[in-house]
Image 1 (tube, rainbow, N blue to C red):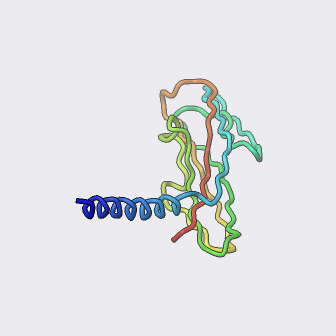
Image 2: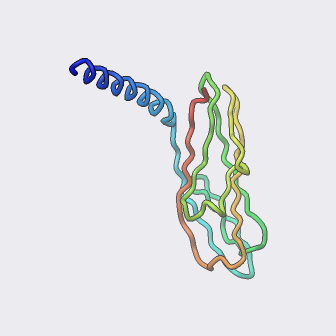
Image 3: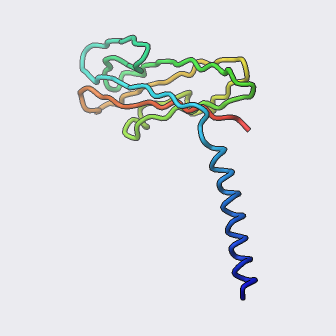
Length: 139
């Protein structure tokens, strides 16, 4: 009976060690957050430029998309993967890199496009949120 308990505890310990290895390797190397701002209006379009804010300015609902870009440089000695995440409420209207993987080789950089498309019927008003850029080591 004692051998069975010891065996079960050993199996549990091994599983926990293996799981912790996978979880530890999935932590981002770096995280950068930007505030997001846009305003849905009628009748005019305005563009805002700001280095610390991902701003799309004033947009009309249903009239196309507004694009902004971020530049990501890889100063590491290994390839990295870039993931852009936005507030859940904006996940359907803000798209990064058309949903494709963003891989940056060592010593290189990429320009990652981020598009806002406000569909017809979207409520007029000012909107704020967060964009989170996560950098992962590519295995």
